Image (cartoon, rainbow, N blue to C red; front, side, top):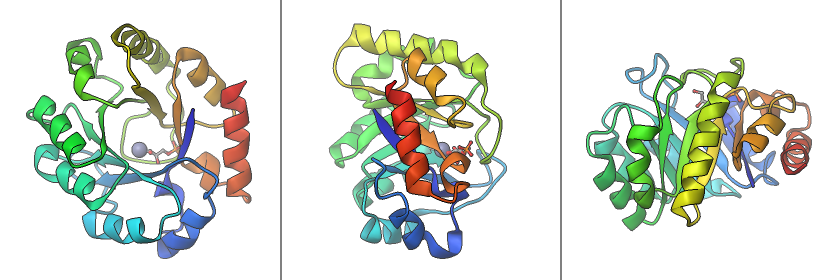
Length: 215
Ligand code: DX5
Ligand code: ZN
């Protein structure tokens, strides 16, 4: 299992230092928002390229943007370890996922809370990770949506049937209070923003989440 703290809740004036605070995590989750796919604007490729130069751990790019077919490959080419596009925005997800892989990244598909998994199960052969959103994408610090846990279970079962190594990621409201239910439902990559960066000791929060998820 992997812990991927979201830098959305970090100090944007000191992102290099904020990455150092979580160097005991597995990946650093970077939320790219374009103010079209979601009603918020964060950062884009130039900042991600700068972060890649200084990050002690691989970057896990979560693209909450329109037209990922055009933009997502650039994040893979830049060197992100994984690149996640939203299925609601992708025009040709099969071809996009293949392009991400051939650029050397893990390819990942994200599902908003209202988006079912079943119609997209056929994409599993092209994917290295499925992200089940446990809040409406756009903002950190929202409450965990426990009604998404059946979808986590459904994805885990499909991955089991399919075989191979496909991660199941949860993102949104993941904390010491909610991570165990996520793990129990079958998630194995845990994104946490406010639960990590809201703590005095961010590395300690990562270690605590890891221990809880492994129980
Ligand atoms: C929300 C982002 C999340 C966000 C999670 O749209 O995708 O990655 O940073 O923040 P928390 O963990 O505070 O819910
Ligand atoms: Zn995210």
